[in-house]
Amino acid sequence: MTRTRLLAAAAVAALTAATPAFAAGPTASEVVTQYGDIALAMYSDALAGAKTLDAAVGALIATPSEATLAAARKAWIDARPAYQQTEGFRFGNAIVDDWEGRVNAWPLDEGLIDYVDTASYGDASDENPLYAANVIASKTLQIGPDTVDASTIDVALIRDRLQEAQDVESNVAIGYHAIEFLLWGQDLNGTGPGAGNRPYTDYDTANCTNGNCDRRGAYLKAATDLLVADLEEMVGNWQKDGAARAQLAEKGEDGGIATILTGLGSLSYGELGGERMKLGLLLHDPEEEHDCFSDNTHNSHYYDIVGMSEIWHGKYTRADGTVLEGPSIAAYAAAKDEAAAKRVDAAIAATLAKAQVMKDRADSGVEAYDQMIGPDNPEGNKVVEDVIDGLVGQTRAIEAVVASLGVEITVEGSDSLDNPAAVGAP
Image (cartoon, rainbow, N blue to C red; front, side, top):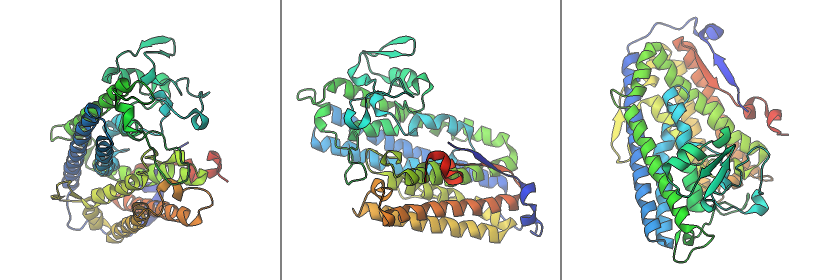
């Protein structure tokens, strides 16, 4: 459903022909070092949030109640902002992209994991043999030619046998969204008000609802333990001697700068603007929202944009309130072409302002994101479209900076933006 757009310096030479030489500013090496330091800080904060979530999940399983379920849900929501701010490190960094599907893959066929409402979900799919496998209720599974022992639900089972089983991307068995489903359950409200409403008794072995409460608890704990382990791995990758820093260094100065701009451009355009936002708006489909069980999508989108702003400006406010600030790609670009850099400044600020309107609309209770993208809702649709337009605008501004710097990047595309007819949109 996606395609790529190549922006090369030669293709936009006219934009840079009269640009003066670099004025005083940070070096590329300084900018890339700061970029790595911000990555380390962001992933460290995401890890801290995941550990808090893991503890809350442990409390829910040990003592199921309305209060412990609410606390676990809050811990999940509280963990999202720090992680979402890291997404600007995707696309340019292979080590992040190769790993990202383990923690934030979506959408998922939730029937792989647990019980579903078959009236709305169905009981089979031509594309996915495991569409309704329900591992929580099944001690053996048939995965292709293999009969898999699922009597014990643990990290090895969900990571090695279920995640993307049979090479089906929607077999998402681990990560934030699998945990989200296990905490909220399906959102059966369509584009009406309300999120998932899983009862705490789904984890109460003494008063069990919907069966297999012990196995459901085992699955949830394994998934949160694995989330912590995966984030620990990424924190290690961004240490001073970590693999992600080494990969950046191998690219050289221009390669490091291109990496930063690739992440910002691709997240702005193909990923967030296209696949996560425009597609759902075109189809008016509540299943095409990022945090579809919890109705937290507005926050996830907002903090993606916050993270891009922080990476651009080389300034990150940590979860504890301390500020990490240093040589930025913004300052580096301004030294080459101040006007182009200011255009990115303005575009990101405009996108953030539009995203704030979306966030405030949801946070105030006017309507959730899945309602905003629903049919026959021109006011809500416009709020979302405004953010998409802002993301497209900031992509164009980033492309002008790429031209000024004389580097080459590939920006991820999206049929939702480039060829709407291909996704069945009117």
